[in-house]
Length: 179
Image 1 (cartoon, rainbow, N blue to C red):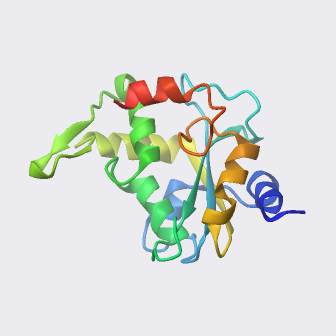
Image 2 (cartoon, one colour):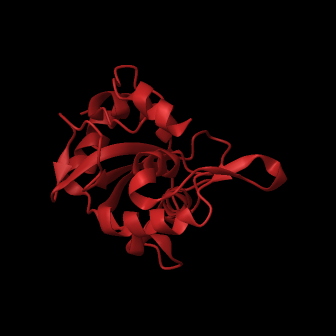
Image 3 (cartoon, helix red, strand yellow):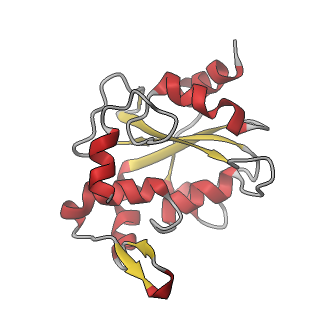
């Protein structure tokens, strides 16, 4: 079995799905190692999920890696925590979720300060609350996740991934909503 196939198997079958509360705080269950992670969601409106893996009534919709290159010090723990409770400025997943849930949660992406960076302001907490109820994550350790990321995305076809997913028919709509 190839590295990518073994990772896909672990992400879709054998690894435990953990909630945001279990991965966010100082006592995060996510290890400080390199690897690839997958976010599963329940109750996410307007996302085509045909063919996406399902577990425990939730659908795999996003895959990410940590770090993205050999020189980075990011770990699974830092990336997963950032997605779980950070801001849309540092998380493409949060940016996409916020765009999809903007009317439901009453949130809007806005520039912050003079830096020009954007986030959902006070809406970030509403987004984190939604994730606590509707998101689960799992991961697979890998020393060089950037080597297998493209193949894993090609196999899993997660609709919230915009990069490395040329067959993603939902990408144009998601980019429009995020703009």
